[in-house]
Length: 129
Image 1 (cartoon, rainbow, N blue to C red):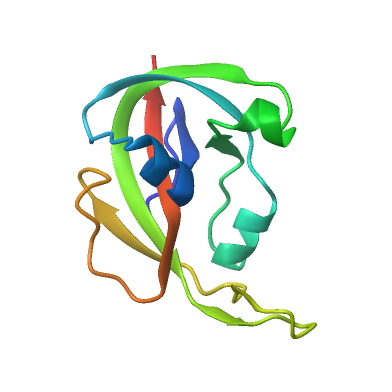
Image 2: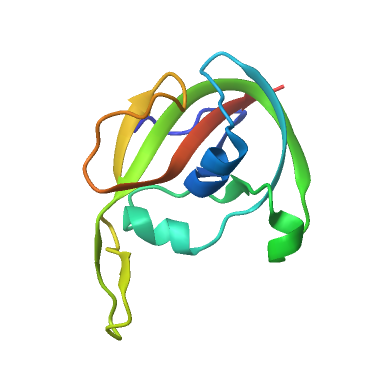
C-alpha cells in the first residue's frame, strides 16, 4: 500500500450503504462528500497495517456518527476491502476476524473484484483540491 502523499486522505465507504444507495465512484472522478470520523471497529480489520480515520457515512445523523465535514478532490485510488468472519467470543454469532482484511486495487466500486471473505467496504484515496 503506497503511503499517503501530501494533500491526500483515505476515506472509508461502507459496503451496505454503497449497496443500498447503488452508489459508485471511479478513479479520476471529482468528488465532494461529507465525512465523519471512522468507526474505530474498521481499524481492527487491518490489524494495524493501515489507518483510515474518516468515512462517508450516509446515515451519520441517524447513527450519531458525529459532526460532518466536507471533503473535495480527485479519486486517485480505490481499494476493495474484504474480511473473514469467525465465531464471536461470546458465542452469539459471527464477527470479523481482527487483522484479516484483504485489499484489492480497483478502478471503480462495481463490479466487485474476486475476493476471499466478505466485502466490508472500500478505501478511497482522494487528492484534495
